[in-house]
Length: 493
Ligand code: C2O
Ligand code: CU
Ligand code: CU
Image (cartoon, rainbow, N blue to C red):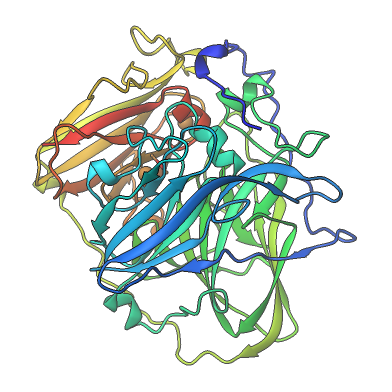
């Protein structure tokens, strides 16, 4: 079942040349059988006054490949978890029971909750234990998610299946009459990549590239479905995508090269829809799309090399994620017509002016074995860290005054792209090397891609939940980097 893997058991090679990335198969290609997309069960919680959600974490067995079964973990099921649906203003209690034979945690990624309820590495749930954090939903309508976050074991536990979606509704988004019929015209898409051993089990950390570059698989799963297709019921469908992969960055586009209509980011809707041929989505990031379907057609959602589609980017570094492959095929069903046209304006996205910022903090990402120039980081014990230090559960790295607005500047001197994630807040991306972020990044976000040699500035307000004793995390969301120490802790005081 589970192999406990510690970063300290690995000696990391200095050479990047030996690190071959796995190439995804041409899923859904001619002659390949496709499978109907699985839709995670929706749970709404009850009773209304304080909604209680039951989440049971357990081992299971899943079938992904013909004739093989795969040992997995899931929440209320064998692989992944249900979609939790709640509303801004709700008081919710998450009753999380650990039926595994090992400790785990469950972190509410993207949620603005007190640190002691955040489900990070300090909120360990031991076997047979119940953890029941209770909090108010105080944020915009958005697609957030939850996943295991055990120190040094996040990559392995998420790989086995410990992740699910957390959907938040509010009045402002309801007023727009966007599709919200879950599983009918509002479709969740959790995109992941996996490799398999001959016995059907997931292959993990079998080469040094898995840690240095992050884990890449050659089979794409969407909601745990291999080679998925979905027959659409309505002329207009909302697609809510989560990159739930450990490390792979997708550059999404349509096979017919038509534009994607982006309406939302990690933390909510954009101010207005953005039309673009490519959207880059790093681990932990979310994007919401509207897809208008025509009768008798199919639309293939693909992933392309990062530099294609006129994005003018240098790629993700070291030649990773430069393959072209299909993610899912949408087919036209009976297609009930859409009631309203796509609104020109969506919501007013909260915005902070850099002059309001009390201070700027700098976070320099380190990979001592793979730095671009001279070795960075004075005294790194591990190979990966931030500002020269690897994650230490007993060390608070930053103290942020309650109520302050701050600019966090993330500098990447490594040869790889890293998705930088901050707990507690939803931020705005100010700039990337002084230039504007992509139009589809101009909403609330909690995770942002930082390319090799570049610096990204984000701005956020730390408005609530002062607590000197319980830290929040910030880290690279390549889970192997996080587990290797590219993570730090901050408290709000
Ligand atoms: Cu999605 Cu600290 O995690
Ligand atoms: Cu998080
Ligand atoms: Cu990283």
